[in-house]
Image (cartoon, rainbow, N blue to C red; front, side, top):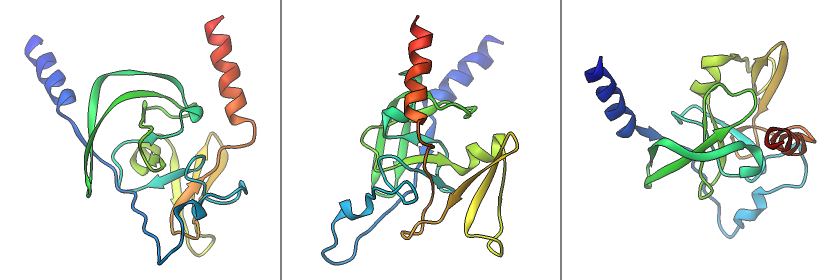
Length: 171
C-alpha cells in the first residue's frame, strides 16, 4: 500500500500536459484586433476556448476563477514552442476538475476531454457550427469564431456572483 502511494506521488509530480492553442496574424494586422467589445465575439481576456488539443483546462484571467492556490503538484505545460511549469490551480463553478491558473497564457482554455468527462457534448455541423454542452438540462454553446476557434463567453454578472460567493466563504 505504501509502495502504491509513492508511485502515485511520483506519477503526479512528473506529469506532463499539453496545450495547443495557436494563433497567427496576417500582414500588418495588430493582435489586439482580436479583442472585441461585444459579448458575442471572441475576447482572449474573457472568452473560454474549447480545445481538443489540451489535456488540462487553464485560465489566464483570475477573475473567472475562485480559490486560486498553490497546487499540491505543479504540472509542466508543453506546447510546440516550449514548456512552462504551472504551479497554481483553482475552481470554476460547474467544473469537476481543478482548473490551472496561468497569467502568462494567451487564452482561457477548457480541455474538451475535461468537459466530455462530466457532460454530454455534441456537434452537428448540419444544424449549427457550434459545440453544445448539456449542463443540467441547459444547453451551453461554444460557437465558432471568425478566427476558427470554438469559444464561450461567461454570462453577464458571472464575475460579480463569484466575488459574492468568495465573500460569503470568508465570513
